[in-house]
Amino acid sequence: MESEHPPAASNTTESVAPAPGFARRAAQALKKAVWRSGTEDAAPSAVATVATLTDRVKKYLPSGDVQKIKEAFRFSDEAHLGQFRRSGAPYITHPLAVAEILTEWRLDGAAIQAALLHDVIEDCGIEQSQLIEHFGSTVAELVDGVSKLDRLQFSSTEQAQAENFRKMLLAMARDVRVMLIKLADRLHNMRTLESVDAERRRRIARETLEIYAPIAHRLGLNTLFRELEELSFQHLYPLRYQVLNRAVLAARGNRREVLGKMMLAVRKSLSDAKLRAEV
Image (tube, rainbow, N blue to C red):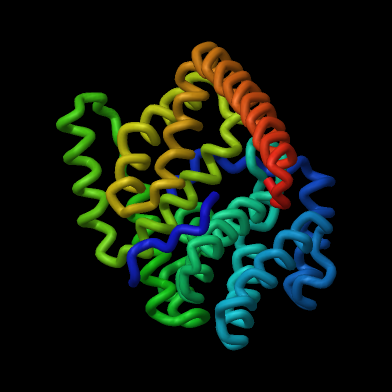
């Protein structure tokens, strides 16, 4: 994704499945150790993602914000203990991915913290007052705002109704960061949609195409808009997508071939004219 900066300032699409008894107990033991000691003893995949997130935020946020982001990760990791995505990945990988997407947009520390925590009210029974106590009112309000958007259900395919729904979403997100977290949440869910059954996959793709992609476009996030549209098309019309994708790849190959021939011709002309130049 291109580095696009949003305007200044979830309903997660996969249900949570409990781990089997033994595996769940083992995961709990490991994650309790992580909660006590920090990220050092976390599962290798989680450590790698946390390290990547930390490296990214260090580039543009003060050290105090970086520390708060680490605390938000530990809180979220504990809250999502024993929860898994349909793919089998630990659930914590989702909020981490959402937070990483926000770092590409250079969002502030409060938004990154809220991204890590965006499902704890909806899926883990955490109260907003607990978030205020640990992370302050700004982060808590962002998380609560995302949770409220998650509760909205879009069912109509009528264009006018879709437009009304988009307006309602934007109106509810009084802080633009709430909508940006929701868009990042939807983007990661679209990137990992293969684990969802076909009917639900189509419903989510349709909702993304009619609601979230236009919102991204309206906010000026054109790269996000294009990716959401492409992912939606891929899941709604898989056969057409394959045909078009092959055609695009072939066209790119032909273009490279044409450019290669042009470069050879230019080099020959320069050589014949005894001119030194790089092409």
